[in-house]
Length: 291
Image 1 (cartoon, rainbow, N blue to C red):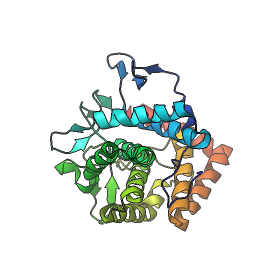
Image 2 (image 1 turned 30 degrees about the vertical axis):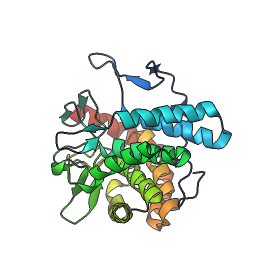
Image 3 (image 1 turned 45 degrees about the vertical axis):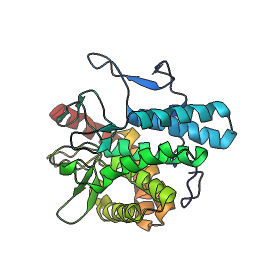
Image 4 (image 1 turned 90 degrees about the horizontal axis):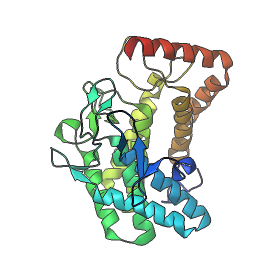
């Protein structure tokens, strides 16, 4: 994390590989993901935001005008493709079906896309001063002020915890990495606008995670989500490592020791060969049962 957590600077993860995406692009230079089969090439707003953030970080470090042009192209795409949902909220839609626990039918939207889109847009506004970026970020932020049943991306559980849902399914699954990335978008919006609603939302997110991170720990690995299946869905090696990085970043942003403690604990799991093997076997059994 090469930035001051109380200043809007480089994004909290480098995304350098995302910045040099090796796949398909459209005629404007916007990444297209190849899902193969009937889905084929698709715009994915999350991937586009990460591409833009990676190029933004490289621009910050190098001053390379080509990197600046790339991150602004991604930001422009986000401005142009912020669509009105069936509820009237402005969201980034995925225009393809996606198999999760339930099939997400197109078009669907996500707290993860909203959060990372906002993170890119407020940086584009900072660099250019162009109001279109701030206006789009403001419109996208509204989804974080509404319950999922009213067109937003927020779920409040029976204990009063505030969750930002990566996939809007019922019952909610509280995907850990998506929740954290979405919360960073709110933090960035707070830094850019000084909006007290964003400050309160981020504080709620921190309280939710600090109270519930223990529920993602199964003694030898971290969980991907909280879907309530008899055999819980653990994280892949990739997502377990991502969780560690995300908790380290949250510790830097908030100073909350709980995040550092679990980052260190999960890093210990990752370095333990036996626990890695148990996690791999567990993951195989889970896939055989549920996928």
